[in-house]
Image: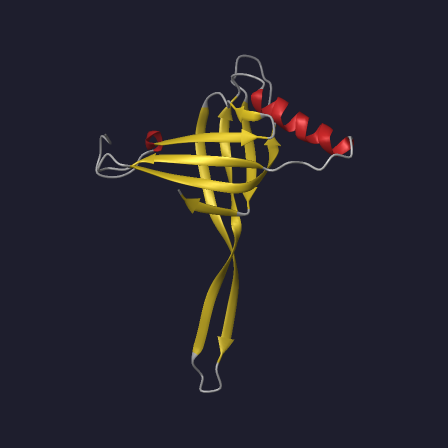
Amino acid sequence: MALTNFSVGRDTQLVVMGPAGRVDLAHVTGFEARQVTQSVRVSRLDGTPMGTELPKGWEGSFDLERGNSAADDFIAAAEQQYFNGTIATPGTMYQYVTETDGSTSTYQYDSVTFKLASAGQWKGDASVKQTLDFFASRRRRV
């Protein structure tokens, strides 16, 4: 059950499925997803403007505190596939959101590709922050 009347970060759980199975990302500290669209605008002869947004996928990122090599290994395997001349297999992501009424909303991201936007800075006693970006062909409620 949600503890507030609005969603907070801990109300969501994320599961990443890669070509070799589940990718257990340690210490996810942030997640952002954005819809990608293509704008279409029409100006009718009578001067009435019309418009629509065509869905062109979803993109976003994970903020991680590096707790294991999962993100590094996941991207290294995808990179190795490329250099081996193998077609990279896209992944799937699931987002589970605990709603304020206690129900769960589930969203599936299809044909997901990933890049390690930041593998982190290694400094003295500081934690290593990583960023994993993604692009998905679509998001749907399941």
